[in-house]
Amino acid sequence: MHNYLSIKDVTNLNQLVQVAQQCKAQPFAHQALGKNKTLVLLFMNPSLRTRLSTQKAAQNLGMNCIVMNLQQGWQLEFEDGVRMDTTKAEHIREAAAVISQYADIIGLRSFPTLTDRDQDYADFFIQQLTRYASVPVVSLESAIRHPLQSLADALTIAEYQKKERPKVVLTWAPHLKALPQAVGNSFVEFMQQRDVNLMVTHPKGYELAPEFIKSTPVEYDQAKAFENADFIYAKNWSSYESYGKILPIDQDWMITMKLMQQTNNAKFMHCLPVRRNVVVEDAVLNSDHSVVIEQANNRTFAAQAVLKRILETKR
Ligand code: CP
Image (cartoon, rainbow, N blue to C red; front, side, top):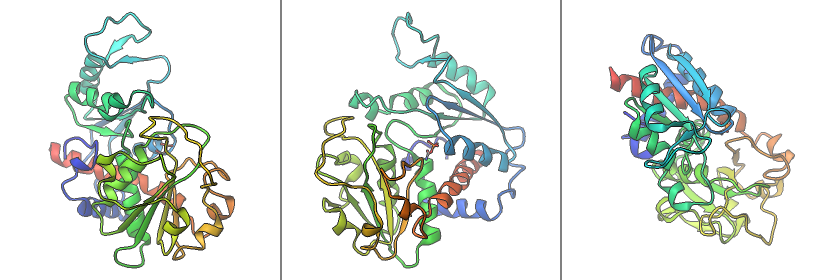
């Protein structure tokens, strides 16, 4: 593996999940692999889980890790061929080349504009970094994907599944703000490569992009989708069609205990952070249904598996 930007960089997802399981069982077994190697993490947006778990993953592999916030104070210009007469002090072309001298691997967290669909779906920021960096690049969430989250999700489902081919339902849930489609997009991409019975449920108007949803079944009746589900994965996203908009809906899509009772005693998943009693009611999060804390724990081992694979490829 060179870069880790999407499922397309993974040759065998089942094997990568197994590597993550091995990292979890023996986190310090490969401390020599990262000796004298440096991971630089760049954040254009705030983060708790991605920031801390990726640092921990690097430490588990014996790597040094440097973190830099780009959202305040140091703004980069990503557009080529522009006159740099704005507040953006440095071009990604120089920045990526310079950071590549300090880093063996670079991670970037960026967000979509949610106004320019073409730019967002070209995954502009991470593609520009990848273009100008001379070392591998790992997505810490881009405009349209969150592949480290999805690998942790796949690991979590593998740990909790009680039967072959469990029913996994990705359900849209309400939120106050317009959010990216990245987690939903990436989750369906990963689940399409796992041996699961995947279904997506959301109100009309919240269809995911055709290149992500492909032939995955969509059920517009949330209660029906929950029937016999083994895993409920809740996430809000803004509209793809009416790009970046929050649309009016005619019922409350919050995940409740009443809905969970329709399931096959399903595990409840969410990537976090989650707004209690907006996305999901307290009773679900506080119950044995919820695996969100272990899901967040698995972020470390997903990141560790990816860093391990990249370091092994670089040797
Ligand atoms: N799930 C996730 O990416 O969390 P953070 O935004 O805290 O990194």
